[in-house]
Length: 172
Ligand SMILES: [Cu+2]
Ligand SMILES: [Zn+2]
Image: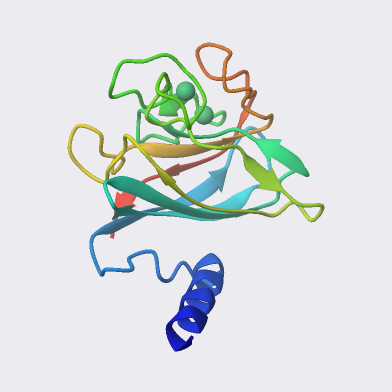
């Protein structure tokens, strides 16, 4: 019971403080989101490895309520005002864009963020096909939030619209 309470508290504080991203004390990475395309979005995304998958935790605010495409993009360059500098979806396996739970997907395809009425989205999940470093590594790439939902099928990027936030993923 004690351990369970600890886990719940850890999960809760993780969303607030970015703590607990490394349950085993292993390597981790993070990205501070910068507003792009005229948005007022801000937030932070944390990454760690868990059971052969990439654990991703995000807390994002300043969104319009509803779903927003959320991906790892190929280039760790958010410098363009529309974040076009981040290039396309990170695609280490050379596949088509698709649903994050399927086999035919870019490694960088993740579930849509879902913002509440206050414009805040929280996400915690484990993404297959990605790691922190190596051929499928996300460090040195970027994480992008879009204006519209990813439909998980349109090529090459799910028709998710403008890039409203972008953050370069750095090891920490
Ligand atoms: Cu994207
Ligand atoms: Zn994709």
